[in-house]
Amino acid sequence: MADEPSVVAKWDRGLTRRVVDLHRPIVKSYFRSQVLGLENIPRGPALMVANHSGGLITVDLSVLAVDYYKTFGYERPLYALAHDNMFRGPVAGFLERTGVIRATPEHAAEALATGGLVLVFPGGDYDVYRPTRRENVIDFGGRTGYVTTAIEAGVPIVPAVSIGGQENQFYLTRGRWLARALRLTTFERNLFRTNILPITIGFPFGVSVVLPINMPLPTKIVTQVLPAIDVAAEFGDQPDVHRVDAHVRAVMQHALVALARKRRLPIIG
Image 1 (cartoon, rainbow, N blue to C red):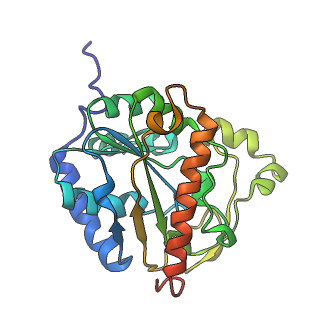
Image 2 (tube, rainbow, N blue to C red; image 1 turned 60 degrees about the vertical axis):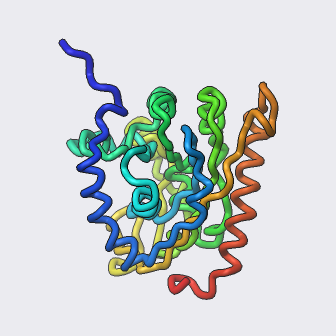
């Protein structure tokens, strides 16, 4: 039996181009997206670390990918690490062909070893459902695996922050207390690797407890790519993971606050 192709070998340039072309009018017209600082992306392998927004209908990857491929072309793939839940159905193969790969240390290392740019949202579901009152707070929920990945691969960390996505509806709570009260925590962790049951208010269904899925409002989304952080140069040959994580989050928080100060009105931007 032949070995399964490596995750990077599955990337399909033509399919990725078609998917990006389909997403372009959505992010550029409906969300009026803007990506700043793409010149900060190094030429070699790098791990891009970003905050995550928008609940179940998040367009963070699409916003970045549209401008990334327009600027750099399709010679260097953009890989995005994604939650296991996205690979449970028949779309798994399709996702891998467009550079969306299962978030494992092995897959990240493989993609970085080919010189690719790997995008990770460390906060995952915890971040994407952060309450509206904390929409401009960088909080990965204590997850630091991305730092270990960058250190082991010997690649720089490229922070990126995005604003606007969390305005697509009103996020009341992550609902961890609700998941515990309904005794769903163990069940959800076994099946879905999450311990939240978020409550939101949006259009057209009003209150939603994960489902039904409300339509995202046409909020303006701005993403800022920040200068790369050379971990070894700034923290030595044996960097402390928690110190690096604290530094990355501090840099991102400063940039996100700066973007928030430029924003005139919610949704409008």
